[in-house]
Length: 396
Image (cartoon, rainbow, N blue to C red; front, side, top):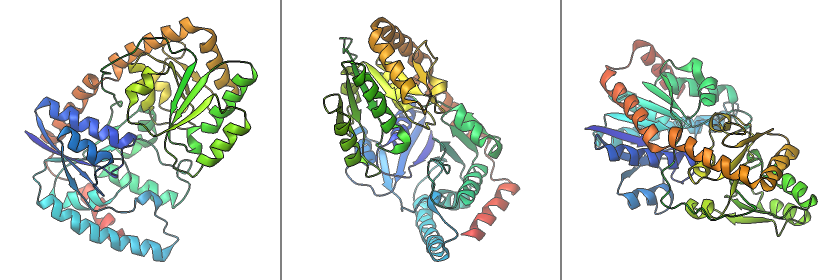
């Protein structure tokens, strides 16, 4: 039995945290691993609530501001954050001493503390990279320093897992032990095959990088062309743009077409009550909602934004559009409205793609292989890694 510690950078339940939960469930099913999730700010919502629901052991860890927001130009702030890292690292040391963990899997490139602490105890770390937080995504902070710490974290990792080839290509020069394992979603319990005509759905955080306004502009085109349709827009507001979005919908005479639904955890209801998923993001390292929709046999339309090109085979199991063109998006939406048989065919092909590439069964064997090989081959940190670690301690 290998004891696995899964480290979450947050206690909410967004994409990366949901995948960490999925991994815990997947590993426990094998009965080859014991699993414990470590997360900051444990309360009765989000990730911790799901842990209690499924009987997954969890423990609270100290929270620290993610290094992606560090700015060395602000000397006083940087000094305070370095001191906080020292304090939090000592707290993390105590947690490690009280747990018998064989391997840690650190979820996302955001937090330096796990590396500062775990290496002291000569325990291997696997880093799970869910995307790219470059200057386009997070323009604030010290971009060069952020990339340096990304490189440090991966250099100190025994293995690095990327969620797509697109993500791996961005980081490939920083680690020789990189493996691509696509995200997965569990098999739906109920699939409703009743026709849901002209109902689009989009599940995204309401952030400008998610292409929401582009989607609204595409809907304007459909409305002006006389199409009857509904767009169910699910998501939480991370950028104070919800009121602006409501105003834009009303100003565009789309109040009866575009329905803001808020946050949901009931994806079964979402996909069983819609026919076509639209993913309009400008940048997407994978595309979790795409494989979810495919698992329910729904047609999908997505921007060419990185990861989705690895999921969708254009014109076979979905449609890809120019990520900057609302006109192209509108054309593809109208195409599927005009060609219902094509939408049904693509949904069926998408369902096949899900089973063959994005099911838990496919991911399970790959994760087990990486974890087992890491556990069996680890004989301590190399001299080069310890030099990097000593430099990290010098910085902080």
